Image 1 (cartoon, rainbow, N blue to C red):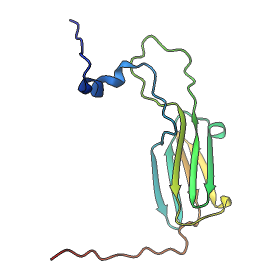
Image 2 (image 1 turned 30 degrees about the horizontal axis):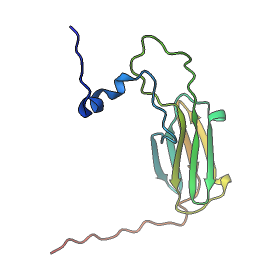
Image 3 (image 1 turned 90 degrees about the horizontal axis):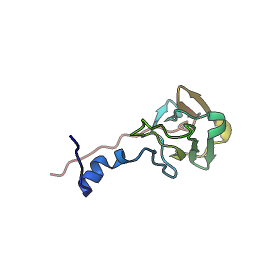
Image 4 (image 1 turned 120 degrees about the vertical axis):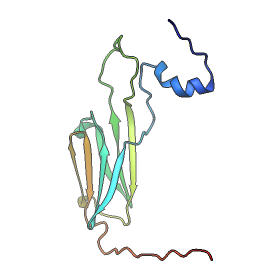
Length: 139
């Protein structure tokens, strides 16, 4: 039995990704990230599997911004006849985290383990105390 799908906006939305054997490359894609406060430090963990951190990633401080950018290179070679779906994205990526205050570059450390880049900005929350704001309801 052969099933033929007529192209409609709905079938394109549901099955469009299955028609290509090459992953989409998106300029400046954003890798998944967890950003949280750890005492006085900010910690950003970015999912970057399959990269060489020494060659493919740059971590920078630009004023009050922590900028992580680089490129995931496609090293698979020629297409395999058996591949029908490929969801891994290749190409440039960029992630920007706004900091509560400017810091010097020596306050930032970065490490890479098991496909996760962890960037720590030491002391960026020093001297800040969260204040609770009362929420009122309308009568």
